[in-house]
Image (cartoon, rainbow, N blue to C red; front, side, top):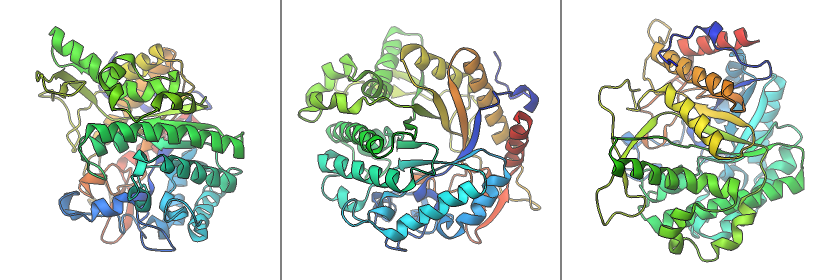
Length: 453
């Protein structure tokens, strides 16, 4: 099977009810961080801390979507997509994470969701795309059980208010990023580097997910509920036994610690053998809460990883390191392009777990092409999307139940620790003028969707 980007649009055929969409996240596009009663989040704090984000960039203005939402939805609808996946900013609704509800924040998402429906777009909100209210972080964040309770209350509020107009809700976006990347590797907010903290946050988020599913179902049991994971497609860096074994351990830690609690009601036995005494006290009693039946799950996917043994007797489990493949095609952020790895991951996860239907909730590429003569020629992004949509098609033909695909991202935006240095959008944003320009890839995606109609 080849993923050399040679599939014509006509070859990328999907079922008639397959959902095509685009995705964004609140802190990456909204801006207006001090307006209409919004509280501070950990990303406000982190991005304003020197040395944390490329070029000192912040999400203070971002794409000014808070004020430009209507014209942005017009652009979204012009692509012909079925659905818009966005996140709700928790601190817009509850500036301190709990307590007083901010009606002006609620009104913004009323306008946004109604605006989607008026344009024929299905609304797919995510509750947590990393913007934890700073007031809760100050009390321990996800390490504090009270944060999980506050999240469940926030989730119920969203369902109470918007449940009659939304098509599905995702609890968390990529909990790996807001636990491992943020508390073990220190790359995302709050920038901690501590395994015990990472495990406490990981477990706290799992509990919050379970409680929020229960709370939303109690509010309204007709809206599909799920979670979005960024699982890793893994290959041993060499054919040596120690690297093969390290790759397996790496998968247990980075994928299994998320999949197994959600879909098996347990942590992987090997991970517990090495790390069980470092999980929060009483974790065993909360596994049933975590493993709520879900209506779907989302997969965010970008690039494969090649794993070797850390060769360090002092290294914590899983004692693995990532090795970059030389001489491969890479995006501008440095990530390897390999559609085959996407197919392999989908088929492997489907073989090893009993899962609800899947949506590809993010997939895309960072290429920093600028506007030339009113156009953005970003053929490499088209090549990337062709490869990865072909991988989805082939995985579906192999029996994986994939129901839809959301391109990341609708438009260029604040790319977390990379600031505005990396562009993932189908639509180019000039951050000085806020002018939007549809890229060649946007027109390609538009044509693909039209062909599939």
